[in-house]
Image (cartoon, rainbow, N blue to C red; front, side, top):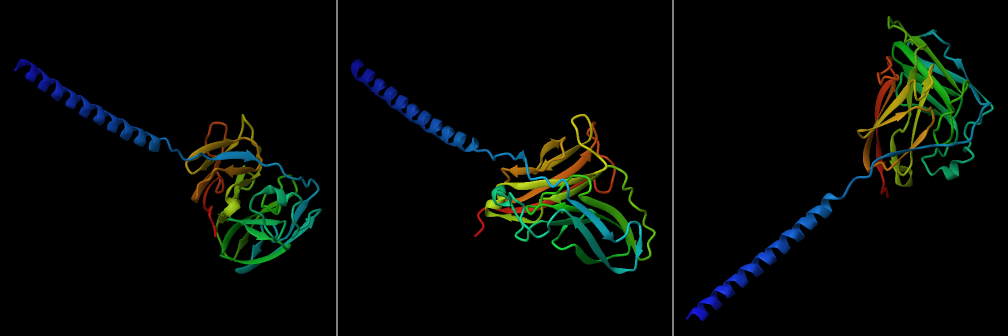
Amino acid sequence: MFRSLLSHILAITLIIALANCGGNQSQEQSASEEGSGAAETVPSVSLVEVISPKFPDAALEMIEPLDESNYSSGTVNFQFNVKNYDLGVQTSDAATKQSANSAKGQHIHLILNGEPYTALYEPTYSTDFEDGNHVVLAFLSRSYHESLKHYGAYVLRQFSVGETDAEPVDLTKPLLFFSRPKGEYQGADTEKVLLDFYLVNTELSGNGNKVRATINGEEFIIDRWVPHFMEGLPDGETTIKLELIDNNGELIDSPYNSVERTVNLVKNAT
């Protein structure tokens, strides 16, 4: 009888041990599956400096509108004189840039009151203005929308339209203007998206003024005025905020020195 009881106890103990072993295996497998899911991460954005052909002799002049002039309400005409630079042709390295490129070729970026630019492929343009004070920045652009940044390649001025008591903007201060990116990017154009801006009355340096770029919440400090490709951007909307800051990280006061734009990326465009 004692041996029978002992055998019964051993059998029960073995069953419990096997059950516990199976339960632990199940828990470890579940934990492993959860861990593999948690390991997935979204790649962060990287900025890569862009090197492009130079056009040191290229120059842009604005014949009209005249600086600090007043025009009648309605349409204002723009006329430019372009020297040593061909509008409407492809920049020499456009085919190898692997980024968004205009099929219409090189052009002028015309920025009115800090708003997104209009691309001009001819040296004349007309548009309607509301009454008030207006600031215009125009600069020469490569066919893939990268600005020419040397002195003489841009014009900055302001004028007024109609009857207005608006105060002129102080254009002698350090100024930042947002240029690229703009609009929607599809397919291969989403892999390398140009980040470009225009500076007036300032330089960037490690111990001076800088540009703070916040891309989808990720912050970058730029201390050289050079264009960059943004790589690793996600599908869908991307938000870019640019700020011109001093060496202490404080925003430099001006109507245009802090600007935020949103663009859309469609990686699998059909």
